[in-house]
Amino acid sequence: MSRIIKVILFLLFFGIFFEAGLFASYTIVTQQPPDAAKLIGMQIDAVASIFNFGEPIISTQQNLKVLNPEEVANTLQTKTNLDGVNVQSIAAQKTNTNGEENVNITATGYKDLQTGGGVGNQSGGTIVIKPNETYSITAIATGEIQKSGVLVDVDTIQITSTRKLYNNP
Image 1: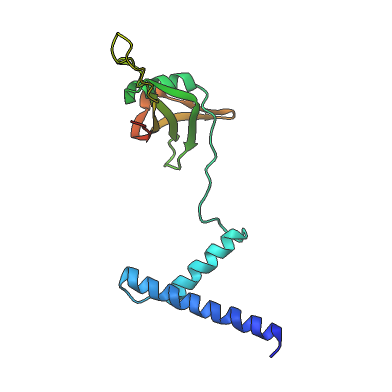
Image 2: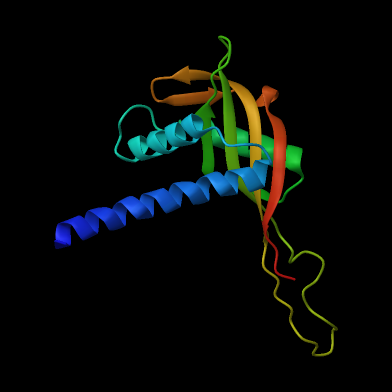
């Protein structure tokens, strides 16, 4: 047999075993018989999105510049009871709603752990340096979309989540 035929047969058998494994794993995970057309269509869509045929699987949202970042940072700091919010980390994305100009706001905040005395005792104790706790803040608010960015209405900011990103005991 020629070398080209061997390569083609190898790729063909590889594809067959791959698909058989996909169908078997689908059956194990869902405990239902696999829908072959749906699984093959999903694979074709995934490969097509890699080569930019059609719509991408994950759409990318473009960050909007927040035109009043200091006011937004102060409001986020007040509502989350954190010691500060990094103004440079504030980002906003427009959400698709029914005519309203809602924006999702993400930011990074911190809580200073140095308050409360980092020094052990007064007569030569050890100095304990603790890192700040870093938090990821997610909020939603209304805003006015302008050409240069978004002007967030700070009275409408609602915190949706605050997650601790870093804490080293």
